[in-house]
Image (cartoon, rainbow, N blue to C red):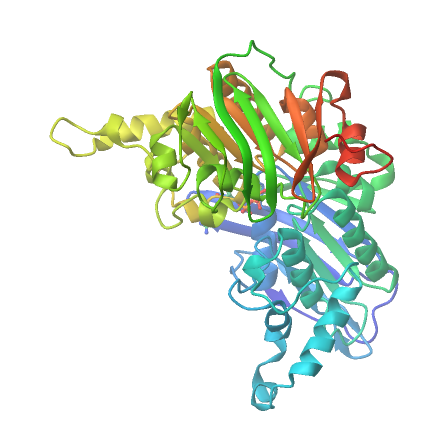
Length: 510
Ligand SMILES: Nc1ncnc2c1ncn2[C@@H]1O[C@H](COP(=O)(O)OP(=O)(O)OP(=O)(O)O)[C@@H](O)[C@H]1O
């Protein structure tokens, strides 16, 4: 990659960042093919595309993680200072064991700074100032593993904005809203708009097309590594954008109709479940039923599936699985009893990154792939993995590729395939379509419908109201660790979910 900063101050017409002809090859796979892209001062450019279309590869080349195989990157300069690129990666790049203050300070503690005495009060004050622009303060003295995903996202973003010498830099946000609830997304967007108004150029990568249309001034669409469109927001609408991303004509790429089958025997009955962030939760899920859990961040929504699975300590007066008492103390026992849990943090909790896709999908249950002599039949495992990869539309369809080498959304599909392949009795899903494109979303919705149709009870925790309405028979709304409403039938709609989640003008149902 050649970097050639322009001379003198960048004129208004000159882009802060100009990428031309960017190309990147992985063995047997061209991830980027002659991609060009400009970002001007004050402009918010969204980059969208299906899973594996090349978005993260582009960001990683800009970050210097990957070496490109052709193309140029030019950065303008302002008052002799070259435009800086500040990147917030999907995984935020934070150290979970360190506190918020330590994470916020980490990038400043190198070179001479590292030798200066640590001034705790100054660091605290600095960290608090950094997160203040994102709304309500939170505890910056605990390891960030204990913070909510949105609070971690805020730390990652605040850190990227620290210490800018001038405002005409480029900020790249790679799927920053995945862990955020609607109100938090608006806080982030306000901060991004302010930065753009101050002269920054923004690249915003997201699968959430409504958010793209809300925030962007211009949208660049990648498909299979190529730039297929670069359009002003003004000329785009949702349907047109979906059509660009999927490559199928307008109207044909929607997320399908919900499946509503007959309810069967009770699969899960829990009374007075309590622990970490929840208390007094009563929950019954029948076979064939999809029960949703909604609630704003901090409502306890995130803890529920992990508690039911036995990953987080919990107590309950009654816990019955398929009519038999169960003590949800261990994940291994939960798996044996037919519970499958697809966690939100799939990259770390849901997979073994150095293994290939085949080994990952078959990991939880190898019994059916084992020969009479007790060895794993690799040919059987290969056939089975190939089927799953096809069924869940994993791209590229190569079961032998290392898990870490798949794009984020395709990793998600592999984890999903892994848990659904054994027909679980109870399927616990946390943010099931986080980071997946609209095509894969449909495949995942179909898979949930199929699991329910096959008799599984399904619990879906999601921050997307639209998703809950599409998938669920019934949705429990949590606030402050308690169920405040149960919505079904006519009352199960997006407006009601948001109202109940925030307690806006509604009476609390006990
Ligand atoms: N380290 C790697 N080795 C081999 N192939 C890779 C590697 N990283 C990415 N790829 C491939 O390059 C292509 C582009 O992947 P990339 O991660 O850029 O997609 P993406 O658009 O960011 O997808 P997602 O929306 O799922 O995050 C994919 O086919 C992916 O499998």
